[in-house]
Length: 359
Ligand code: UD1
Image 1 (cartoon, helix red, strand yellow):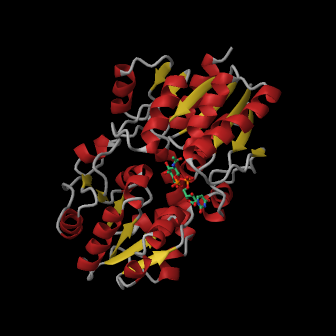
Image 2 (spheres, helix red, strand yellow):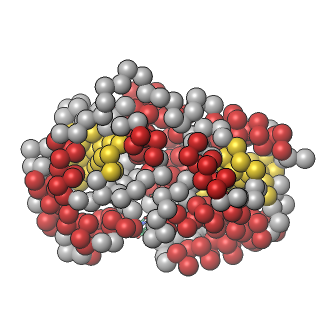
Image 3 (tube, helix red, strand yellow):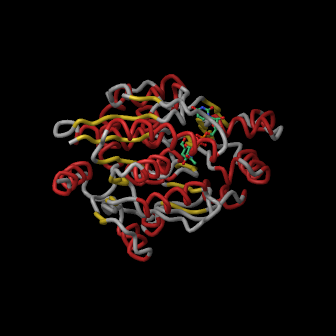
């Protein structure tokens, strides 16, 4: 069976890793990198950490407006699809590369399978929300990670066949935890376990709003007694700089601004953090799996189960809410976390589903 995976951004590579391992024995699996992320620390490092082969194709689309990125990807993918005769194209998550991969495949007459399907924030301002909805309605096979995701797909009467294999992060986090015993990140940054907060922010609705950036800096200033480790995404750095706020951020002596880190180091940082503050979807899941309280600086979340279980709290970028949650909020005492993301056999179930479906 000839299968292609289209990936392009950091969260796509992470989800690709276990799927590649599961399907590579029974299929001719071709990896197509759109080039959406091109910095070593947002791209190549993940291929190295997870022993993924070098992509068979790199379309080198790079940065640009959504129209440019998606348009160029669709065009360049079409050329490969028309020549290579794949039976199935796999896409992952909700990035521009995900949607472009699905659209180009469908237009080339190839079946599409979407890994991490059915997530909704119901926030039409989020670029990822549009990518999710469109990708789901283009897909023939939809692998939904949670019960909420399945209900979302049923309500929208999607065309394709829906499966519930659980969430792929359970497997990746397990592997990363094993590898993290070798990580030197705590020593290198001289961090004491459970003494710091891990912070990430890269969503357009936060980074592109001066108000949100100020609100976050203000929270950092009030939390001067708390050490905050902030691996900063290139777009976030650009926005702080562009809105003349980088200096004020750098003046927060409690904030350790560091470059983006690889997955294993990131999991090590998360495992040893007191709490996590984030606007990332992946980090909300990973912190739940690691039993680390998560403060989400968004108005809504797709991962409602983590909130329902009491391990994730939504504060938006409201300064007071961030400060209070950082200082005072704690999840309920839990002996064992509920397996809301499944039993860690997601890649196997996806592999078996693909094998049984294809002619
Ligand atoms: C993308 C995804 C987002 C995902 C995130 C993870 C979309 C719409 N968004 O957001 O869902 O959570 O990746 O990181 O697909 N840049 C670099 N180096 C790079 C890549 C980007 O400097 O390797 C800079 C560029 O200036 C670019 C900006 O970051 O303009 C934004 O990059 P882009 O790929 O458009 O979206 P992300 O914000 O990374």
